[in-house]
Structure formats: C-alpha cells, structure tokens
Amino acid sequence: MRFDPSGAIVRLGATAMAKNSTHLATRVARERYAALNVDVDDALETLARIPISLHCWQGDDVGGFENASNALGGGLAVTGNYPGKARTPDELRADLEKAYSLIPGKHRLNLHAMYGEFGGKRVDRDEIEPAHFRNWITWAEANGLGLDFNPSCFAHPKAADGFTLSHRDPGIRKFWIEHCRRSREIGAAMGKKLGSRCVTNVWVPDGYKDTPEDRTEPRERLAVALDEVFAKPLSPRHNLDAVEGKLFGIGAESYTVGSHEFYLGYAITRKKLLCLDAGHFHPTESIADKISSVLLYLPEILLHVSRGVRWDSDHVVTFNDDLLSITREMVTCCRRPAGRSAKNRQRDAGDTFRRVHLGLDYFDASINRIAAWVIGTRNLLKALLVALLEPPGIRAAEQAGDHTARLALQEEARSLPFGVVWDHYCEAKEVPVGEAWLAEVKRYEKDVLANR
Image (tube, rainbow, N blue to C red):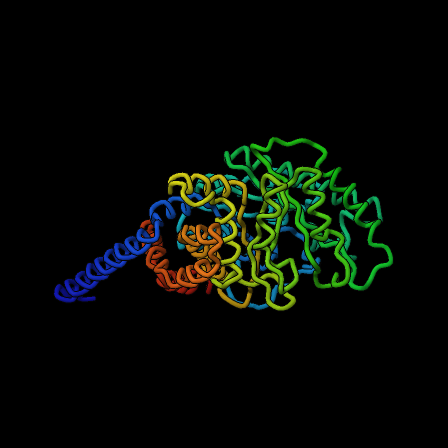
C-alpha cells in the first residue's frame, strides 16, 4: 500500500480532534456532576476496585472437558449453534483473554468442576483434585486473575433422575457429597495459591416435574448432606462457601428441593454465603429488594447477575431497569446518611463491595460467545457506574420526607452524562471506547474462531 503523507496527516488530525472532543466532554460531565456534589474520580476509583467473575461456561456452551459426553440436564439448556465455540482448555483460555482485553478493570473467572484437565484419563467427579486445575491456576496467576469455583452436580449418569445431594439412595448421595467436598478443597487451593479468596458455590438441580407428596424429606436429606460437605473447616482467607437456590428448572417445574427459603435458613444458621441469582426467581420478582434484607443477617453474599426472559433464566445481561435496580441497591446499602464526605462514602462503598461478590451466569450459543461475555460484563460495570454517580441529594430528600423532590431527582438523574464518564474510564483503562470493541471481536472471529 502506498504511503500518503497528506492522508496520514488528515487521519492524525481527526484522531487528535476526537481526543480533544472526548476530553472536553469529560470536563463538562465532571462539572455537571460536581454541581450535584458527585465526585467523578471517587466513583471511578471505587469502580476500578470491583471485580466481576466471568463464567467460563459461556465460552463452550456448558460442555466442559470430561471424557464422557453427557446430556446437559439438571434443568439447564443451551440454544443456538453459532460457529467457533471453544473445544479445548487452551482455546477457552485464549477466548477469555480476548474478552478480558475488551473489558475495563481487573476481574475474575468462575470455573465449574467439569472444566478440569484430565490428560485423557477417566476421572470421575468424586476423584477430582487440585492437580486437575493446575493449568487454570497457572494461567490465572500469569494474568492477575482471581478464581471462583463450582461443583458440577449435573450432566452425569448419577444425576440422570434429577436428584443429587437429596437423593434417596445413600450411595448416590455419598458420591455427590464427596464431589462437593473435593470441590471445596480445590477452591481453597486456588485461593491460597493466588492470594485471593475463592468463592465455591454449591448449586444442585434436585426437584420434581410434577407435584410431590412429601416436600420435607428431600430437604431434610439435603440439609444433612450439606452439613457433611461443609464438615471440614477451611480457612476463609482461601475459600468462601456459598449456597444457591432456584425457583424451578426444566424438568423440575413443580418442586425444587433447594428453594430460596431453604437456603436462606441454611446460610444464616451455618454461616455460609447466600447466592442470589437474578434469573432464579419469578419473572416479576427482582433480587434488588432482597440485597439489603439479606445483608442484615449475613456478612457476605454472592450475586449471580443474569437476565430472565419468560421461563428461561440465563440470557446475556443487558443495560435494563432490572440491572440498574440491582446496582443501585448495592450502592445504597453502603452509603451512610447524607452529609458524610465523599472520601468516607467511597470507603463505605469499598467495605460493602467486599461483602458482595459479583459473578455472571448466562450462556447464549446463538451469538458470538466472546461478544456475549463483553456485552454482559460491560453492562454490569456501566450500571455500577450509574449507581456510584447517583447524586446524594436523592437520599437527602428522602430523609427529609420530601418525596416529591426524591422522584423528581431520580428522574433527572436518568439523563446525567454517565456515558461520557464511562468512555473516559474505558480510555483510561486502555480498552476500546464505545462500540469499537466489536470490530476487534469480528477480527478475532475471522482469524481464529472461523478456523475451528
């Protein structure tokens, strides 16, 4: 290609003009927020300290790397056949690296037990060890990532009838208890090696498609089994135990053993983290209102951010009112009464965000899988930024009993220039601004994914 000096000058001039325009817009946005007693720099510093745990299973449609090929089951279903899904651990790690490069901030990875590397040998789930995840730990350490972990109590012959830890067969219960025990040990090994606490989250699909006669006995078995899983104390510096409920699943529409009420009681009495999954409640129910209630009784919780559509719970997270409600509730929980300094509000936010562990949980095989990661994570970060930039005058109006001003200020806040601040944050973190990341995903799809 012939070098055209004049063209180069034009292009460089356009780039400089774009940067100047961005800087001007950022300055105007800072002034607009400052007039409302919002410190943009404090908000961005807090946002930079909030890690999101990306879910490995978006990259390969919840396939995992075990030798056996089993139907997914467990109330789970992945739809779509977009080309280029990861077929090996190395491909999955490469795809994740591409996703992380397009997301501002430093984040984490959530692994399922079925993603171990077994060297071509058959290793059943009650035999897994930290050694099977050595490559993941080494990779995470090299990339400065924390790891979270999950037992895989589905897609296995011993889960074929829809029951695992609450199974009436003692032998099958023992198998899954041992799997969950070993998963905790793996999580602790990850946390110790990486110097970052691993959240090991237990979810089981147990339930009935039709109405059961006895709802109590399976829950009694589940409680006893969980007590056996958690019997061995592990250092909270390395591993945090979480339990996750669900309203229903495919094939368990009428009764779920591990309901939210069951796990709320279990988490409080056993001092475990409670996982609230945005897609595991009734479609008209939001987890936002639950956060402040649960944090009154539990020191830490886990949030799985997803998007429910009708009966399905695992769609790519979009920048909608449900998401904004969740992030606003998180920030509201940590803000003390109006009048405290911005520095103290920032410190309070940091304390609360250490109590709330954020992860994503969805899988869409109908679109580019890397784009799905990027869209969902960037949307969650945007929503967190909106909440962090919310003017303290809204809370002050509520405390003064001026509900008219509260509503008026809430509505005015919707049009504040958070998008300019977001673009500035992306630029500062050296990731693509706006929709520019999509071109990089398309290039990667053409050069890498299309050849799989």
